[in-house]
Image (cartoon, rainbow, N blue to C red; front, side):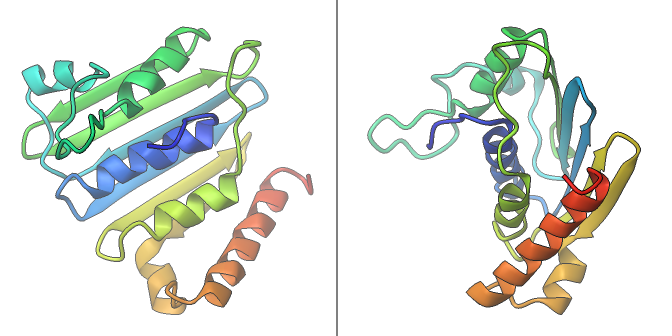
Length: 182
């Protein structure tokens, strides 16, 4: 697993968990203000019972096949990053229903990780699986936009690099719009 250096890295990691959950649909909601960056990821996958949910926060527990001691550190690192910076971490899961992870970063805390590259992260999330339908809601203060992977896949061939770049440019423009040209 790559190092989770930015908030965008955490979103990709939790997004990958959602795609691999056995479901076919997920929601990613990103709400950013001057002082907070909150994301919610929900999936309709296999979910976890309460015992498994507790284990999922243990950095040495994983459901992945063990190859050279690969551990499931994503949830544990996310929780630790939030707790150390006065953020909030919530995870809810129900077996055979799905999982929801909510992370609210306090951007004013000096130790808070940088947000990272949102357009690149969104492209990565959208191209993780073409069988998984993402509904993505992105807000900055009171402005926002919506992306739906099913609609995107109907209009773009994301197996072609030039089409991925076109979509990324579109997302960059959406980001500029909601942030007032920044």
